[in-house]
Every structure is written in C-alpha cells, then in structure tokens.
Amino acid sequence: MRSTKAIFFKQLLDIFKNKMVLIQFIVFPLVAFVFTEMVAKPNLDISDSMFVTMFAGIFAGMSVLSTIANFIAEDRERKSLRFLVMAGVKPYQYMLGIGGVMMAASLVVSVVFGLIGGFGGMDFVRFIVVLLLGSIASTLLGATVGIISKNQQSAAAMAMPLGMILGFTPMLALFSGTVQKIFGIFYTMQVNTLVNDFSASFAKPALIILANIVVLAVLFVLAYNRKGLRS
Image (cartoon, rainbow, N blue to C red; front, top):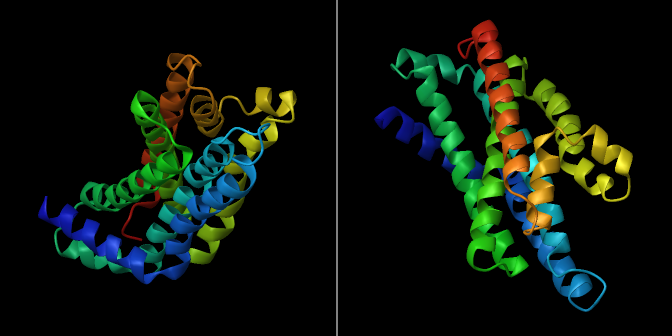
C-alpha cells in the first residue's frame, strides 16, 4: 500500500512538472468553456452542452490514452522501473499507483466539464460515471501501448493515431451513419451516446463499454506477460 501511494504521489508531481501533459488536462475543458459561452449559449439552435460532451469524449479517448502511454514508456526508457522492482515494488502496485493518478485527474476534469455543461442531479452523476468508465478503458489501452513501446517516441507514434481515432470518431459519427455503425463497438462511441442523450438507455451502451474494458484488460495482461515492466 505504501509503494502504491508513493508511486501515486510521484506520478502526480510529474504531471505538474510536465507542461505538455498538464496542458492536455487543461486545454479541452478550456476550449469547451469558450465554445459554450461564445457559440452554444448565444445560438438557440445549438445545445448548451454540445461542446462540453464533444470535448469531454475527446479528452477521455485521446488525452488519457496518450498520457498513460507516455508515463509508462518514459519509466521503461529511463529504466526507473528496475529500481522500483529492486526496491520491492510489485508490478500491480506500480499499475495501481499510475492508474490511480489517471483516474484522479480524470475525475477532476470530468467534474469541471460537468460544471461547464450545467448538468445537475443524477445527470451530473451519470456524466461523471460514464467519463470515468471511458477513462478506465483508455488507461488500459494506453498502458498496453506503453508496455509494448521501446521508448517514448514510439509510444507517442502509436498512441496519437489511436487516440485521434477513438476521440474524434464519435464527432464524425454525428454526420455519418456508416461511421456510427462501423465504430459502434468502441467504447468512445458509447460514451458519446450516454453523455449526449440522458434519456437513452444506460444498460446497452454501458455493457459495451464494460466489454471493451474486459477486452483491453486481457490485451494488457497479454502484453505484460510478453514484455513485462522490467525490460
């Protein structure tokens, strides 16, 4: 427990030290706020929450994925994981610590998005829960990318296109039924569905998101068994 807590606070400090990572957690809520106040609210034809849900989905699908991949690839490249292992830190403790940072950061950003969107009551709770589920899926995928990557550069090269596809596909689906059908099995599409329509059934999209989480967890385990955290 102490090791997990130490890794959590160490990674939390790294977020504030790394300006590029910190920007990713600030820019999307900021852009959502600007577009909401300057475009959505003055226009009666646009929902006040349109840009909030759009950028929140992009954040969960792209920023979380690329950030966790960068974290793990950086630790692997610097060989700092070897020192952690020598200090008695178990791989699952490391993952709980670094994943906990992502969930804490995602929770804060999700709350900010929810406040900008003006959600209240159970809609606010549902919005937060859905974004956190999407962030969990992205964390698992990003962790897998980080483990199989040789260095930060290769991790970024792999994480960026994946994040862009997962983050921006829901926006494209608004204009294309074909895109919606093809990519409907991905968790970001279902996250988009749930945060855009609070009257929509929660069960089916949530099950698809959970199925994505299970599949991504299996992929992570396979990648870990093959590459490990020590190399």
